[in-house]
Amino acid sequence: MKWYTNSEKEKKLKEIIKKKFNFDLKEKIIFRDEQAFLVSKEIEEIYKKILRKPYSLGMYLGTFKKEFKPSLQFMFLLSKKIKNKIRVSEKNAIKFSYSNNIFVKQEITGEIIILNKNKLLIGYGKAGKEKRGTKIKNIQDVGWYLRKGG
Amino acid sequence: MLKRSKYYEKKLNELFDKETLKKFKEFEEKPLPKYIRVNTLKTSIEELQELMKKRVEFERIKSFPEILRIKKSSINIGSSIEYLNGYYYIQDPTSLIAVKQLNPKESEIILDCCAAPGGKTTFMAQEMKNKGVIIAMDINKQKVRSLRSNIERMGVKNTIIIRGDVLKSKEYFPIKFDKILIDAPCTGIGVVRKDKKRAETLTEKEVKYFSEKQKKIIDAVTPLIKKKGVLVYSTCSILPEENEEQVKHILSKGFKLKEKKLFLNYELNTNCFFTAGMIKK
Image (cartoon, rainbow over all chains, first blue to last red; front, side, top):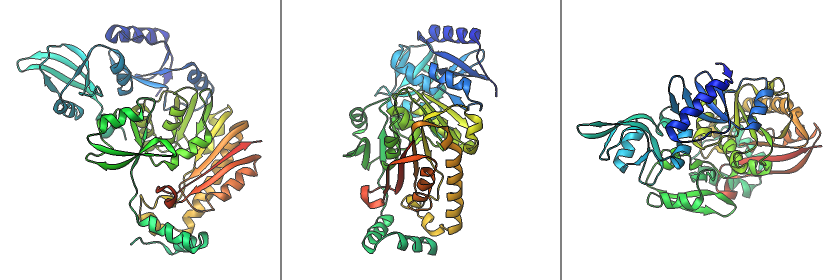
């Protein structure tokens, strides 16, 4: 696993996040293979001094290869600030948090953040029209912390 | 009735007078109440109570403003949506005392030596308002994975996680820390209420093994603290070999004792916990 900085890649990722979520990232991004981490100046300074490769640092933004897949931690932040989100019923919230796709009545398309009725983050999906209504395909959900988080 | 090894029984008789021992043993048999620490990086006590009021009945704890005791619950508090959103951490209140003693500040660089699964690390970040830097280190692959998961879930962003051997700290970190927390690996004999088998299996050999390990960790990290920096040493053990003896060892390395305290199970109706705060001269 290689840690590196790449100003061109960083710029590209920030542009994607701006375009996709209308969200500005000001701090520096450091990469570890496909994983992107947002770091403060203080973290960056210490990162440069220490002689052991970190396991992770700062805020894990998500994976970025050709496409950007936001992490749950970043999604939580986005869920408070961006507009492309939807509140779903308790039944759908539970279903989605178990990695399932859901159907909703609202007519929406594209990538969207899923919240429950109390505005808590459930996950992130891709919405598209189908005969039964709008299908939201599960990309990532908070149940991950129980299934794989350890 | 709780089974205790001969060695543990002998140690208890050496440690406590009759009255204390009676109370202590009574509480070892009692079920442990569940506590959560509210993550003020993401929510407030009031908001969380309101969100969960139909499912969980909470009680506030006077001396721990961040802690809620679960009085009644119709759900599994380890898998609620609020938990998965990082609104709280399931945590015994005594373990917050080590962090309170460390008193982490927003501008500081702190080393958390044996950090997994991250209960104290994430509370430190909360106290530091996600500023400054915490280096959270642990050696075990699976434990580091769960440390990272908890750090992400709790919305912590001022941490560098290192998977590594604390005994090699000097090689890893050519820097000095403002503060260091050694939440030392120990026999865990103070958490019998959570793990009843512990009382049955404790041996003298094990105590020796851990006390030697603790000494080695102390030797490895004490040189990394700045002058006038703070070191907090904590364990979930009640044994002097793992507590007072280690504190004595730290003091012999040019530290001054600020305060130390052993919390017994009946004092706050929790697990037992030892913590000592020291300052480098």
